[in-house]
Structure formats: C-alpha cells, structure tokens
Length: 521
Image (tube, rainbow, N blue to C red):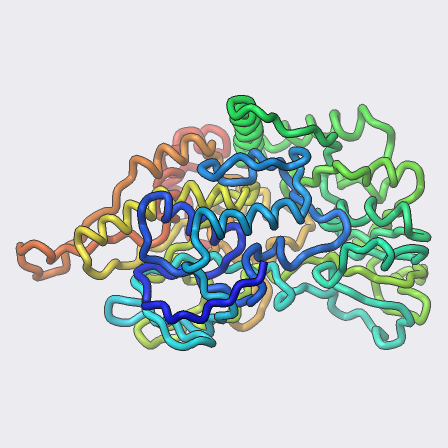
C-alpha cells in the first residue's frame, strides 16, 4: 500500500513515531477510545507495516501464534493457519490503517530527525518541517535496513565470487535460490523459516550458527471460524506464555522448564546432530525459542540442511568460492545470507531535553515520553504489550485533558541484579541482548527495561494497569488554586514496576531476592 500525505496537518497532542504493527496498535487503540488528536509519523513512503513491509524473504511469517500476537481489540483475522505468512500480516496492517486508524492520520515519508523537549511540549524536527506535540509514543524499532548487524572482523569480503545479502535484502522469489549453494549465517527465527523453504530448490543449504535456539516442532492448523473458539485458543496460548514467564523468573527454577523442553523436544524425538542442539545448561529463553512449522528439523535429519557450530569454529574469512572457518574448514557457497539480526536499541534520532543532548537509553526519564514496550519481559509479543500499556497511557492523556499542565518524568527505574537474571547466566552465550550506547560501545544495558524473566502473568499486569491512575504532584510553593497540580505519569514502565513490586512475595520465595533488595545496574 502506497500512500502519500500532502495536506498540511496541524500539530497534534500525541505524536506516534512509526507505522509498524506496534504503532498501528497504539493509533487504533487511541481511535477506539475516542481520542482523535494524534498523528502517526512514518519515515518510509511506501505505507504501513514496518518490519513486515520491509522483509520478504522466503518463508517469512510470524514466530508465534496469531491469537497471541495480534491485539485483542482488533478484528479476528482470516489467516490460513495459526502461523501467519508475511503477506497476510502486511494485508492486515493495511486494513487496520485504512479502517481503524484512518489514512488521514499518517504522514508517510516523514523522517523524524530530532526530538526536543522544552517548556511544556516536544518539538519534532522532521524532513517535512517542524511539528509540536505534548506527548510522544515511541514505536520506532531497530529492525530495519539502517541497523543491520553484520559479522565483524571477516576478512577478504571483496574476494568472494558470489552474492552476500542481509536477510532484509532477500526477495521471496524461489528462482533466485534455485541450484545455488546457500550459506545462512545465524540461526534465529529468520534462518528457521528461510532454510527449509529454499532447501527444495537449492543445491545445498548450510546454517552457520553461534547460539542454537531451543526448537519446538509445530503443525499448522486452520484458525477457528467461531469467535468464542478463537478466543479460547488465545487464552490457552496466553496461559502457556505466562507459565513460561513464571518459570523463567530465576535460575533456581528455570531448570524445570529446561528439563521439560529437553524431554519433549529432544529426548523423545529423532536425534539431531550435536551442532543442532543447544548446550545442556543454556536457559530456554537465552535466545528466542524457535517454532519450527516449516520443516527445519526434518530437513536437518534427512540431510537437506547442514548445521555448523560457528561458536566452536567461527567464521574467519571469505574466499572466492565461499568462506573459511577458524579451523581451516572451507564452506562453499554461491549465496551468503546474513541472518545476523539488527543493532537493537540503536536509533537515528537525536533527543534533547531542555536543550541538553540525551541518550536514548535515558528514555525512561524523558518527560511526556511513552515507550509502549517498557516493563515487558523478553518473552514478549510487541503488539500485545503495547495494547496492555495503552490502558495506562489513555488514563494519563485523559488526566492531562482535565489538567492541561506539564507532565514530569518518572523516577529512575530499578532493574534486577545480574546475579539472579538468566540473561547473564554463564551458560547463555547469546549476544542478542547486547545493546549500544551513544558512544557505540556494546554492553548489556538495562535502561531499556528489557529485563529477563519478569514473573508477572499478563492477566495480572492488565489488572494493575487498569487499576493504576496517574499520581498528582504539587510543585514547592505552589498555591492551592485549581490547575496548580501537575501529573507525574511518564511512560508505562512506572506502572509495570509497581506491578512487579506487588509480586515481591512470589519473587522472594522463588529467587531469594526481594523487590526491595533490587539495585540499579
């Protein structure tokens, strides 16, 4: 869907940055609540969809079930199975934009260059001019061609006689892969979908992996046609996700989940090569668990896909005919697909608060700045988390309508101790959560509130967000006249942290550390 916005729009109260599925969720939720004073700014001029618009590799689709992926307040989709294809999700996004948001609410081809907070509002410096807004809903992610992650220190790339592409540059036409020796670097959701899809037409497919994810085989089944049965499916998936989140809360109980996954997915199934198995001590959520519904495992067993342990024998250099590993082993290839992910946490927007340049990592302390994925566990579904957190933001916005005064940033957010998070387990070699600060120095960063293993079921979190109201704050020396009070609301992470505090008793029993013992890291 290609739309261009030429009519001048006045500055909105709410500016939503990004028209991917999270931005569409936020915009549709505001519209459903009767809030019309918002604009969605989208850098790409080709329409909505974000990641789903930009990625079209063979086999692209959801890596979780549709009933637990799409927002609950939007219409039930008519997809072919519980795992949606990329074209189905993109069509759904276009439908939501047209029917539940309104195309007049979008400014396509409008790149936000800088955000400046001063006085009582944000100023947006964009490629189409300057706008002002009281609130920012930040739905811009790093999963785009601008932030692709490529392996560092690989020599002689220019000598390679074939083609090197990042997965975001791959097309869906299988003719491009026919008869070729394909090397896929990386083994996340992209590789698990891409490899078995191209294997029938390729000469050979080799996956060079670093951290092998836990892989669960799933069969595709048709979505229920009855609304009540679809809702029942959604509840079952949510309960499963809540249970996994519960067991993932600390290393001392994570082994229960790990043993069950090993028994069900490995010990009771046909054996896999050693390179295709995760290390025994690796936490299940060290990497995002892969749902294999396109036949990756069966293709490995019958020899159509080869898996090479790139952690034990890393990639060192390109050759005219392929690549060479540290051991001297050569892997021949005509096409190298870099399924190596993205520089998560990086943005190309400058943030200024009262004239001072600030790091995006400090977003939890920006005034009037709403990050809809804040406070979420890493085993999370972005559209669904956005929907949950919008409950709180709508209350903030309505409080502002009643008292149109300056909002103040929330307090600093506590994070879990490294000692108790499986993210920092010595058995977790994944670099998935290695983020970057403004100086481009990689480090594990908790400022983004991507904390591993938050033991909060979604139903309970929704109740807390529904119950919580913005707190009032009165400046020192302020009078008693109406309008003197300002509201301390900020992003929904404040609500999520209070939700965690209510789980103090459970956390203390399961991990040996209480909420009050947590520290800033």
